Amino acid sequence: MSNEEGEGRFDAMLLHIAQQHTEGIEQLLDTFLGFLRRKTDFFTGKGPSYAQRVLMNKFSEHQKLAEKDKDDDEMGKKSNAGPATKQPAEPDSAKIQELTDEEAERLQKDIDRSKEDQSKTKPDQTGEAIASDDLEDMEHEASPVDAKNDDEENEEDKGKMLPNSQNGADLPDYRWTQTLAEVEVRVPLNVAIGIKSRDVIVDVSSKHIKVGVKGQPLILNGDLFNKVKTDDVYWTLENRKVIVISLDKFNKMEWWNRLVTTDPELNLKKLNIDNSKLSDLDGETRGIVEKMMYDQRQREMGLPTSDDQKKQDVLKKFMEKHPEMDFSQAKIS
Image (tube, rainbow, N blue to C red; front, side, top):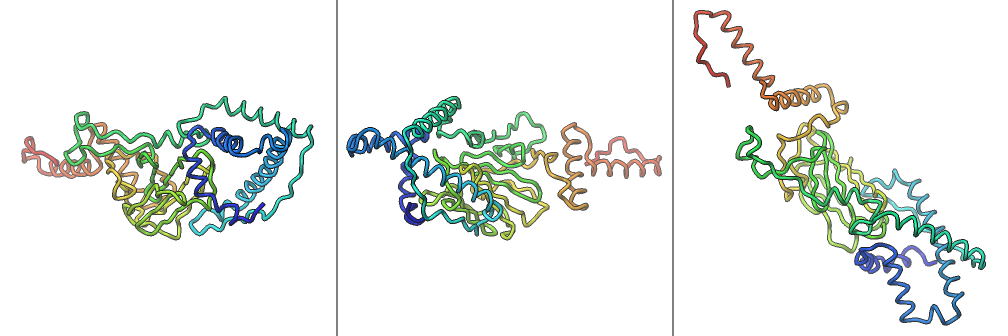
């Protein structure tokens, strides 16, 4: 095996080829083997058993390397969760061991069983099974606000997006959610084969974010709605197909109505405040949020908010002290 730099020198080209194989890994392997069949004597030059033996040897070699990479990734997961991640080194070499005919036959049966298991899982349009849920979440936008069905909605709220269940938005290329303190961004990668952390671009400043894959156009690139703390930015590569980014808001008393300034605006009156993690907030902030939640429930039921109740209590006390005055026509706003 070559060193890491030499092994990865064709990555950009191969990633481009892989992305054109929307049916998954089997279609990609079929293309490679078809090339060898049509343009070389790989299958016939040294007899049929030679080609099978070489393929099985290489399969065994790379399977061991993949298992070692997985172990290394798991051991370094915490250190890999950030922009300044240093990736574990790839092995410089691996000893190739030729398989006997009996071992090759047993390995082939294992491969056939694996194919049968994979065929039972219907892949989505990108050929992915692992991250299909994340991709389905990104394939639709939230519905616009229906002004006719909401008596309290004013002209400013018309056309705004409804927030998702976690107070963010489901957009075509990514999904974001928020609490008062944090923002989480999930960016699924449209690739048939999982990539590694070193192939990912995540660049977050206090007011700007860039996310993508090396050698490809950026998936997310824009100015953030408001400032974040750059020292508390973390990201991970989930299942090698979904980039998950955690942002810490600079202002923890504010709901964002969009992730970046080019996103559609959310209707903040429709936030699901009950889903916020109140236990993470300090006492003063929690009191404010609980008041907001109470007022929202009161408005939904057509009842007075806490401020309205205070006004009514003051008026009631004043009326009790001044029974001679007529308040029958008074309007409280």
